[in-house]
Amino acid sequence: MNWDRIQGNWKQVSGQAKAQWGKLTDDDLDIVAGRREEMAGKIQERYGVAKEEAHNQIAEWARKATDAWFTPAKPKE
Image 1 (spheres, helix red, strand yellow):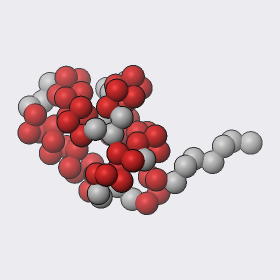
Image 2 (tube, rainbow, N blue to C red):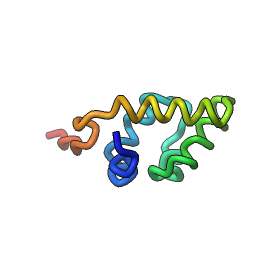
Image 3 (cartoon, rainbow, N blue to C red):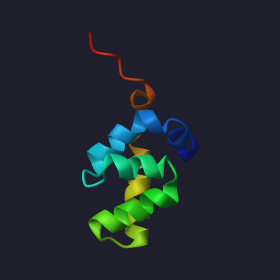
């Protein structure tokens, strides 16, 4: 998936990021705001992995992105 699309739709995909990396807080995800380098730094910090490993995890996560990630959640009635 194109990272620009992920970054541009961060509000919709941040839930997917939280599902992947449960140790990331909502505040972490707000700070990241779709910026790849900041996300790698937060993954390194929370999981104690090397920078390269964090980038590999992000790349794998981005490859799994589907159009459904970008569909806004429908409000509950």
